[in-house]
Each structure stands twice: as C-alpha cells, then as structure tokens.
Image 1 (cartoon, rainbow over the protein chains, first blue to last red):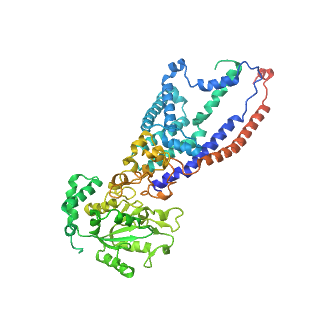
Image 2: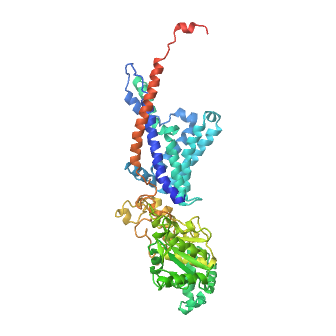
Image 3: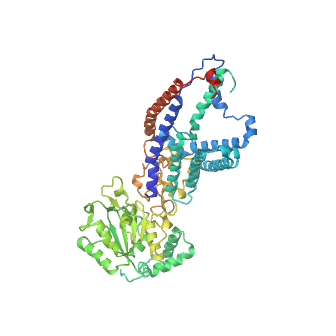
Length: 219
Length: 362
C-alpha cells in the first residue's frame, strides 16, 4: 500500500467504519441508560425539576472556591486542555469541512497558526495531567488501564496533527493519513470508554440537578 | 549531427553562446538547489559529454508528456540540450515509420547495448497484451526487451511512473507502471500529467552530469520533488490566515485566497510547479485560480473528487451516520429490553429481610 492509497483508505472505508461504530455505539449507550428507567418519585414536588436540572447542566462548569483550593492543578489543566481541544477540533478550517461534509453545517474558523499554538498548549496540559496522574499516589491508585488508554487516544490525534501540520519525518499523505487514523481510533473507542462523558455528562448533570430541584434544594 | 561530437561542440556549431549555456547551467543548478560552485562542474561535464543514445518508448499514453516537452516554449536552450542527446527512437517525433522505425530502435540498442537511456511514457497493460501493441509487439515485451540493455530508465509522466489515468478505477487494461515490471535497473520517475518540461530536461542534465539523482521513496528526484506544492505555494499565507475561496467566483477567489476548500491537493503533492512554473515560468494551475489536482502523486485520478477538500471523507458520512443511528436504535432497544427484564426479574426475586432473619444465628 502506497502512502496515497493509505490516505485514501483512511478517508474512505476506515472513516465510514469509524463513523458507523461511533454513531451506533453512542445510540446504544444512550438507550442502555434511558431504558433502565427511573423509579417514579411519589413525594410532592417542592421545586421545579426542570429548572434545577437545566441550571445544574451549566452551573457545574463553574468551579466553586473550595474546588480551587483542593485541586487547583486539576481544574486549571483540565480547563486548558478541554478548551484547547474544543478550539483545535471545532475551529480549524479543514476540520470544519469534515463536519460540514457530515452534517451540512458550517461556521467560521481561526487562522491555522493560532490552532497550531493552541494544539501545543493543549498537548502540554495533557502531558501535565498525565504526569500528575502518575506522580500523585491517590490518582495512581485510582487509575486503571482504561484511564491511560483514554489519555493516549486523546493525545495521539493532537500529536499526529502537529506532525502533519509541520511535515515532520514522513511524507505528507502518510502524516495526514496517520492523523485521520488516530482520530478514527478515538471515534471507535469514544462510546465504549470514559470518553463518552462528552455526551453523558449533560444528562448526568441534568439528573442530579433535577433530583435536587424536585426536592427544592440547591444543587 | 554526428554522434561523436561533444555537446560543447554541437552547441558552438548551433551558435549557442557560452553565456547562454552557462545561464542554462546556473538555472539547472538553482533548480536542483546546488551551490553556485557546482555550475562550472555542470558546464564542464555537459560540454565534454558525447551524445548518449536515448530510446523513447510510448505505451498507453496521450502524448501529453511529449507535447509538454516539445511545445513548452520554442527554441530554448533546453530544446537544444534535448536535441543534442541522440534521440534514436520516438514514435511521435521520428520521421521513420513502420519497420524502418523499429529497425532504428533495434540498431540503437545493438550499438549502445548497456549504455543507452530508456525513456518511457505511458503505462503498460498487464491484463491482455493485445490491448496495446507497437509493430505487433506487445508493450510489455518491448519494455522488457529494451530495458534489458538500458543503463537506466526514466519514467516520464504519471502513467509510466505510477500507472496514471489508464490505471484509474476500474483499470480496464490492468495497467501497471514501469517499476512494477522492471526490478533490476535504476529507474527515475518524473511524474506529472504532464511533467514540467524544465523538470524533464533538468533530470536528464542531472543524470548526465552527476549520474543517478537522489530519489524519494516514490523514485522521484528529490531536487525537483522535495517540496510539496502547499509549502511553496504563494497562496500559503492565506491558508495560514484562514482565508479561503469558497467557490470559483466568490470574493475569496477574486482576491486570490487559498483554494483548499475547493479541493486543492497541494498539501499532499510533491512537484516543482509552485517554483519552476509552466510556460517559461509564466504561471501554474493554482496561480490560474484552479486547485492542484495532485497529478504527480500515485492514483491521483482516484484520490477522491478533485473538488472535495483533502481533509474530508471520500464517502457519504451523513448517510452512514443515519444508518448507524438506525442500527444503534435496534441494537440499543434489544439491549435495553434485556437489561430491563433483568432488572424486573431482580426486583421480583428480591427477598425481603425480616426481623426474624436478622435474629437468626448463622
């Protein structure tokens, strides 16, 4: 297989397969959660479940002062790499074209040099998070293979993206092909690992907020 | 023109001044990214050179490569340099035809066996030898016969180098490249559809002066195919700034912004178009407002649509997502139903612990 054939394969059958697994996997995971159902709450409502749930979905993104004191590093590095991932994934023009091809939706992007700089900052933040996970005894004890795998498949597209943008080592078709392949690995593992929190996070927050809201307590 | 004359003597006879000959050598040196100190070396080597015999075989091709070379711009020093090799066989350019033409080829082979340069344009049918023949000889048989006595082979054009358009899906003739058939000779690929004329002559000069050039992994001379179009493109600053043409007639196109969104294959294409340019350095496709097709890369004809951005999937992803969603609904409903049943049976089989149970001594 030549480099050009490899690029064609990752843009063609491999991308289709990865998209299929990711989309089908996400629907399965959602149904798995939803169909388990919830016990009816027979108590009288003391507040609005909807308002509580809706508020909590967004409120949980703002850390309280206590969290900063307890785990400032996790918060700051977490924010940096999440915002960085958002910028790199959704605001790089060649990426926007992929979303447009899939959904028909398009939006303006940022200059590629800004994306490149953001990518480097994101990679540094992810490396810091990994070092913290390994060095901190509690974090290390809590970590399992899955956590390192998730870190790896998140970091890999950033690294291959950097190498493809700067043309390091291999031919351009091979570098771009490897970058797309690393994204496909992420897509395939997405529904079946902790990565699915990108979607489940919202309903988990809703659930917590709605319970509290129904009881009329702050969440 | 005698074959015994050196190139220097021939050029003198033709009235080419020393100044213009050295200018050619300097241009060639700069194209190959060689230091200026190499210019006299190129000049001295070329001047002393006796015209090497060149046999040019055309197989499944469109003659575009020959057109590129001969019609690029008239009577340049490159043309004269090309004249001064002994082009002993070339369907399109030779006056002889029929058995006389074939005789010229056989004679050139016999006289220069082991020393001649074989230039090939066009791919070779692999399925059925009858798809393309010359004087009743199949392309494959002729290539193998002529290649056996060649010092080196130059595969001109994407068809000879990689199979090109004849190899495009569904490849009805089973077309293959020169390097697919010949394994025991040095092969220099000069891909492009067609290749830049200055690159064809440049590679020949490089070959005659310094021997086999440094090649990349696809057998292309690194001096001409070392940089991607994207990296040397004058529209690159627009890519970096995130300024793109969305269609061929919008404001971005008029302002000369980057053509990535319109399917430009510049980022994955290695060629000298952006620097050497075409028509005596006048322009190149991107400068004319059209995205690069990637014609110097293998299988460029099948590398997705010419007008689809390089980063996008080649298949219909939206449809895939819908199918996946439907499949997920069915599988998820089945899984959910089974989990629900398990939950219900767990509730049903739940045994309540009574005070008596707790009082029991184990």
